[in-house]
Length: 359
Length: 124
Image 1: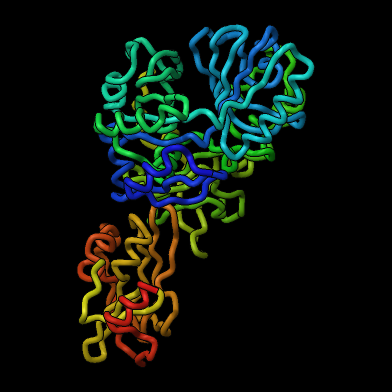
Image 2 (image 1 turned 180 degrees about the vertical axis):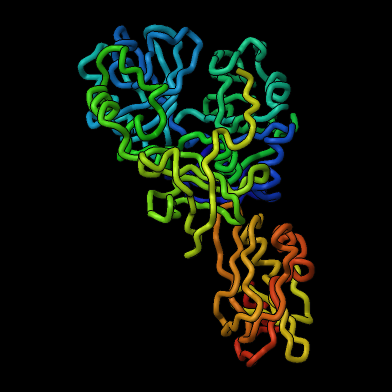
């Protein structure tokens, strides 16, 4: 599927690849490294992330419904606030990770992963039968842009009818964006200050072009993944999947076992008591090399797990997220097998490079 | 797209410069363009013997890991250690400072293309 910005990507020299059912640019003509640098070093990068899905949840029991289907405590959300959360199955493993936007007690907006969209919507609609609530998939009508980096605020301010300084981290506002309406949230997936912008498809080209005119640099999927991995942010299909619970994925901070019943709660409580089956750790190579997804991780010479996301960070070198056996999470000498050779690594803390989000 | 006339090329988009029995290897402008930003080069060990079409080095771009194949057979006598610190030279100067290795040739190859043949090959 093409987003409404497909022709704009091609015109900018975008190298188009299939991604979660969409045709999206992996990079533009100047390459992923320059795009990465633009976002990290003082510019504003613009990303077409229309592949992400949007679901409206509306009705008298919207809050009760979301308390039951998501892991985080939705009752803690204020109007105009965003919350990172997850959808679990009864086994306590991930259907998806999501963000929940609260408009009011009877109206919420969920942002979901492209690859999980149909599965998520089917799950939410099935569970909604027991609640006075409507679940509507808005994905095909909505364009989602991310604008990230130090100059994001100045670039976006020129075309919105409200003061962006009033939108704090993980807050959002609704109002005029270009010639139509939309939602702007102070969220992102890069570790830089910035925004995610939800607009109708009809105004996508206009807003995209206007932001380019303000100096925003178009960013493809490759640089997006570099920026996300450097922050250690989980990505569905890599760090999280239907094979791990929040206990393994270090996401108990969005899983509120004390909030009342929710899908997966019982299974997560059992796993928490019995202990994680494996643990997610952050690794930095101390020798030359690039750790990549699925490379094997050894601890004291014993195969212990594998890399879930890995990269060459221009600032931090070879870095990776990896699952290892629980007993290896904090001790033992780590090596990563790269083309048959054991390359020395060490545990480190996240993020791999400094975050500049304005919390 | 640059395709110097004094080099020979392979279907795997490597180039070779043959001077007497010494051959210098690298990847073509087309190859570096297709690979994207190169962030790591794994060089072969000096003294290693390589066959024609054998993988002798690895280059890694932001997203991909790619084997690089020897255009002709020989013994590795030099490697471009500059690439360990500046792998981007493969992108910026594929036919110059981005060379990868030199071999003492043990045999030639009938598979090599001239610049004209390679240009035609790229167009097909």
